[in-house]
Image (cartoon, rainbow, N blue to C red):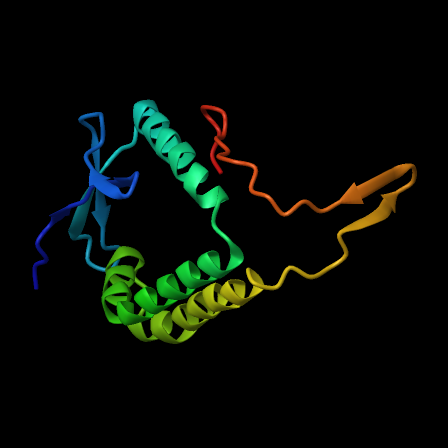
Length: 156
């Protein structure tokens, strides 16, 4: 059974966009050797565009309160669970993993982790200061620090 090759885009700044370069990469189903998708190869300009979008989003995210962060994570968990079957099909074609294993071994912990951290976002407990190193006092400051970009040429 042949699969139609789907051209994918990058998700930057809340929208799907084409890459700034002309190069693309085929995604191959390892079980069949069939091309299942084509994705743009990101360029340094694409990274710059993504970092700019992330910095813009940071300003809004910084102001969110634990309740809002919790609700967003719960919505994400629900959305992932609602699309579990489609995600299993994609993962199976992408890496050759049996659908049943993806649904039983990967999906539940993924959703559970999001729901756990949704709850943790509303629970700001724990020791806030302490002497963890001789001569120094350490403090926890629960505040996002901003966008982090790896230097060019590094992979993370």
